[in-house]
Amino acid sequence: MIGTEKFTFTGAKGQQLDGRLEKPLYHRPRGAALFAHCFTCTKQSHAATRISAALAASGLAVLRFDFTGLGGSDGDFANAGFVSNVEDLAAAASALDAAGLTPTLLIGHSLGGAAAIAAAHHIPQVLGVATINAPFDTAHVFEHFGDCIEKIEDEGEGNITLAGRTFRITRDFLEQGRNQPQSQRLRKLDRPLLVLHAPLDEIVGVDNARDIFEAARHPKSFVALDGADHLLTRPGSAEYAAAMIAAWATPILKDVVDQAGGTPEGMVEVSTAGGKFAQWVRTSSHAFIADEPRSFGGRDDGPTPYDLLLASLGTCTAMTLQMYAERKKIALENVRVELAHSREHAKDCESCEEGGEPLQVITRAIELTGDLTDAQRARMLEIADMCPVHRTLSGRLEIRTSKTG
Image 1: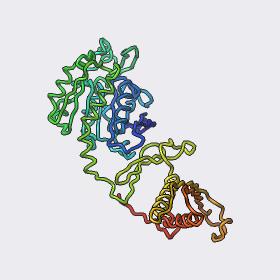
Image 2: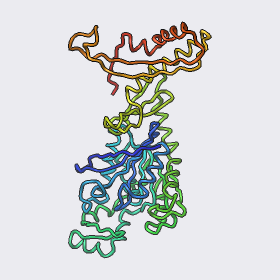
Image 3: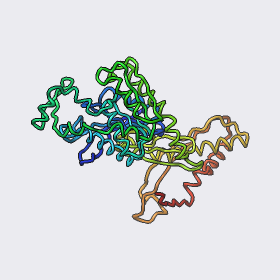
């Protein structure tokens, strides 16, 4: 399963950019990716939503967002242009990093692919770039402006109509898209490149893929999106592209995991998972999300901190009783433990000073199933108080905090 959450951040010029973060719900992401949408599209485009969801299902966290002046993002599209898109990607990478998700992959569709190539040089954390139906020349999109370009050049601005939608464009917008050194950027990319392109693309011809591929140095790969159209609207096209990206990225992300290392046995690592409260919990061999319920402002993507505390005591209690019964040859068949946490007023605590902190109370009900005598049941309840977690919680406990970064 995957989860989608709102993700807003500040662009290079102070504008608020609106995004959506797709992530796997029940395990830590094996990497994070940025998705750059096509020209005049938004984060809600067919390709953006389906590829992001498919990659999240494969274990990646993916941020798709609206470039300046489009969709839910602030700013003036007329003055945005290619350079602005590159700046937006760099700002998105910084925002992901701040949220605890280092961007390791850049994925761009159409003109967004050209922007991904350019932005890679500004985002050192990125270890691989994938382009989908991308143009080699950033000015390629101007071919669809028709006679409007001359008017924009003469008057400083003008309107263009694409796919039935009208956009205001300025002369600066045109200048941003011209003479971009994409060939030089590809030669100096210095990281794996995956070029995906539909051979029958009628908007951006497949010759662009050849030019991108030839300009880049190894390691580089090409995948033909047979039967796909430019916007990947045909059934299965976007999902196929996502599967190819996920497979290509696997060795790249494995290197990241190997360098980072795992959580040592006996330790627990907790890190931000996005959203208001969600946290990744990682042990040496398991990972899951902890969260708060929706009534507290969370997404209810996992157990709460107190759920985990009670679960720790409950599981340790049941394990201890099962071990004792096995050692003493007691016919115990099943253990069921119910726990709850509450706070009582200090006046109800004889050992508390007046006005002190409320007494923290955990109630624990134990149900034992099996052919047990009354004496055995009574002894088992005594043993429950001897489980290691019970002794830790009720004994002298110090929590020592240190700074690691």
